[in-house]
Length: 116
Length: 111
Image (tube, rainbow over all chains, first blue to last red; front, top):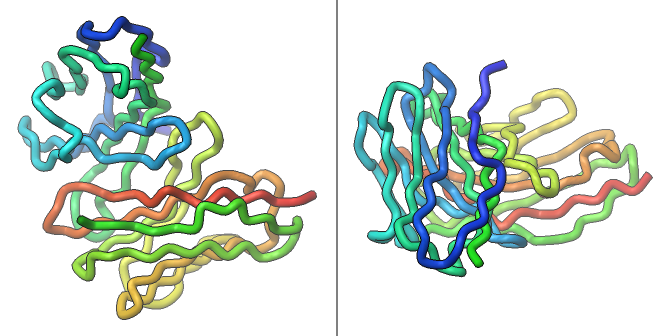
């Protein structure tokens, strides 16, 4: 069964460092998302991406965040200068379409980011 | 600000009984409604989607939607210990390309 793949599973970094989280969405999916979940809290929307551009972003997704689809398979989230409060599980998700029946999200297994 | 509200629980249900999980949402423009299951330390997994008022059944799961009351529920029949997890309610409006999640309800099935 097709799945969303995320690497690395764990990332430890020093405050102020840049990190890149990587994702390979399901191959025939067109819509890509990043969510994060701070321990014990809800799954929070960060950004959605379609046709090589951001379609929606939350207030969390400020100038230190960026996303990119560098080739036909990878989808990345870059955090330029990490802060302690960026420590969370980051989930990549993809969906086949939008609208009724299409926008079911399939999640990767997540990257646990720890900022020290 | 769109909100999805759920009782955080824990909800304890005896094995074999019906578990009933509830969710309310604030945006009347919401069109798509989902229930995800999340085991501790794992990613959310879609278990049900519903788009029209009424009931939708899939095996032991039944999703119920009442758009007038802005209310979504999930019934789990014949609850099993493996159903113990956090259940996330999620909604979407077609004008936005984002699905918003509630905080989730922790369900504990008692053997």
